[in-house]
Length: 183
Image 1: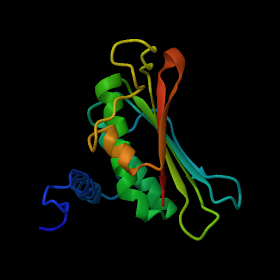
Image 2 (image 1 turned 90 degrees about the horizontal axis):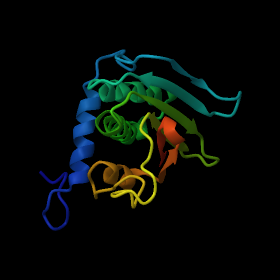
Image 3 (image 1 turned 90 degrees about the vertical axis):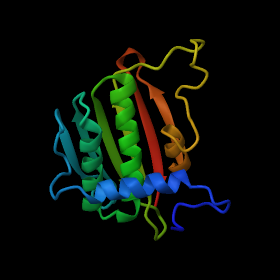
């Protein structure tokens, strides 16, 4: 097997994670683009002629919520005709949603938007996940960075794929982690 190997013969963990996510996303049953979601859900296109599109869905605190969020995101991108970013968005949404469940211990809202490029290639897809856990205040042990990043694991994998990403504090209401992916 040559896929997933680096020049030095070591397994390329990033390629392996993408392949596994592709297998999981490909296994989604038809119409599963939002199953398991609770709360509000909306999707649609932006201003007439702008080509911008968006979708929002809130998920309850549940171990099944990250998979439901992934299916929601994949369904939205497929409806929008942005197949080239489906695998990357699936990985990003799964990671951010799993972090909301595991670390924030809260439900979360996924916000997706697509903005076309002025060039002939696809534009930017922005993925945002909002949870109810505030960022730790500056100076608290372990808060040197708003969110810890380990190479090719968790947010490290997100960082490796993202054009840009960051976190915005919502004060005591929680935080939003956002990621921009270019097609």
